[in-house]
Image (cartoon, rainbow, N blue to C red):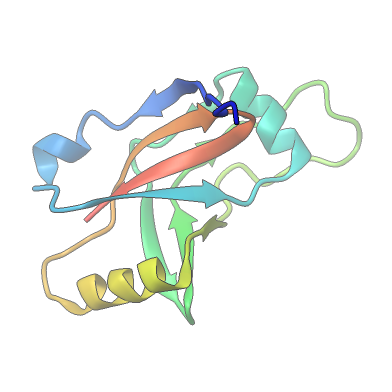
Length: 125
């Protein structure tokens, strides 16, 4: 069988995160987006410099990620700094719950990138 190659294209990187935090582990997460958000990301209108993740009620949410509105959208537009759900496996979420209960550990966003047709977020611990 032929292997499927996925190209990884950088969208945005958080250059402050490796300087401000000691990264213990890295996790790749999908992100739940609306249509206008995907189109705005394709234009490069995303800012993750202040973004971080938080575990709440068994789910992981992304806060502080700024996706500017898409100008060519019709009447419906997205909120630029709304919180967005991150898509992770259950065992990864349980590991992150354990990490967040330890004092001094945070979940900063390291980078955002395209993996094929999907937007992925790389989290650090």
